[in-house]
Structures are given as structure tokens and as C-alpha cells.
Length: 265
Picture 1 (tube, rainbow, N blue to C red):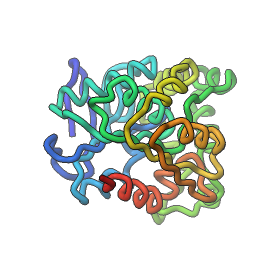
Picture 2 (picture 1 turned 90 degrees about the horizontal axis):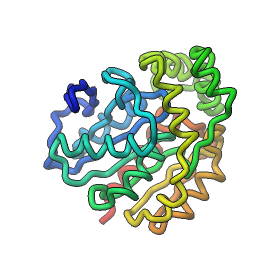
Picture 3 (picture 1 turned 90 degrees about the vertical axis):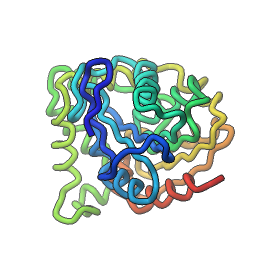
Picture 4 (picture 1 turned 135 degrees about the horizontal axis):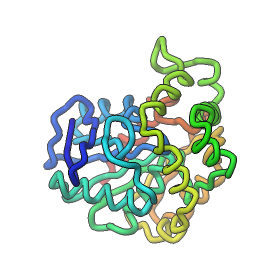
């Protein structure tokens, strides 16, 4: 659906169902250089199982207008502004990669608005090499190709895709190319400069689920395990052989874990 906020057109995937703010709201937050298509195998699944799903494109990403936001704190505040503009009192947040940092910051800063959190392929900090930052500024296609290669596990590189007829690598490159030219650099810089992750994670009191990938080369498993151990009320699931792009590579396992978590009292 199209939604205007602060005079900017925002695109939000709702899983093919009309959004109802009175329902149990699940907001899915994409990672660096990504957009709502990250959640194509989750948004519809949960929308048709009784949840009010929102998978927004952050400004400057996908089909949303505006300029990319410059910090994780600004992204977290933007999520709350989005909730306010849609009359959402409380929501479940699901974050992937950079979206985990945004989820952590929002849950810590606005605890009365966030019901529970799911953190997929995340960590308390996501440092970015200077080489990748430079590529995102001067050689965008190369930066995208590098991230897509590193972001996928062994099955994706063998073109073993859960969506028949599609290649993870080709799909990922096309997805990232949809964004504003400055989006990836802004996102990577925001991740690289975010330092509040450990303190924010410690302050999370909401129920939390950490879904981690055994072969994650972007947010390695040990850092996800540290994140899970830091949250007071967290459970952890590790998906064997999976790479960083868990929602696409292992959607059945991700959806099953999320559904069980959402249904907990």
C-alpha cells in the first residue's frame, strides 16, 4: 500500500491483505540496501494467518520516496512515527540484519510501543569495512555484488532456491538495484557508526527471539549468540547451513519459528 508520511510517499507491503491497525500488528524491517522484497516469503504467510503485516520500504529504498535516513536512531524514530501515522498503539517488530539494530533501538527507546521482538541474522553491532564503504560510494554495482555473494549460504550459491526458477544471487542483485543510489552507503554508514547496541540490548525487557544462521559471514553466529545471551528474555534458534539471507534461503524454518514465537502468551 502507499502511505504518505511527512510529505513523503512510503511503500508498505501488507502481504496482500488490507491492513487493520486494530489487529495484531507485525512490522518487518529490512536490512542495508534492501527493501520490502526481503520479506516476500513472510509478509503474505503471516497476513493470511491473522496478523496485520507491514513491511515498509525505508525512505530512499525500494518504492519509497525521500532520502535515506542517516542513523539507526533516526530509523527507530521513523518506525514509531510510522506507527503513530497509522494509529498503531503497539506492534511486534521483526528485524533482519540492519533491521535488527533498528529493532533493538526501538524496543529499548520506546518500550511501551513494542510488544515483542524477533531478530534475524543480527548482532549488537555491525561494523563495516572501509573497503566496502568506499565501494558503496564509488563502485555501487561491485558493492552490491560483494554483499549478495557474502550474504548467501552454500545452498544459494548452488542455486538451490525455495522459489522455483529463481536464482538467489540474481534476485538479490535486482532487489538492491531498486534503491536510491545513496541508500547503501547511508545504510552501511549508519550501521558502522551505531554504538548503542550493547546498552540497548541489555535494556530490552520484551520477549525476544533470535533466529541465527550457522554460516553467516556478515553477522557471524558468535555475535548473534552474544546478542541472545545479553537479552534478559530471549530464546535462540540456529538454522544449520544457512547464510545471512535467512528469510529467503530458509523461509519455512523462519516462518515456523516466528509463528511459534508470536503465539506465545
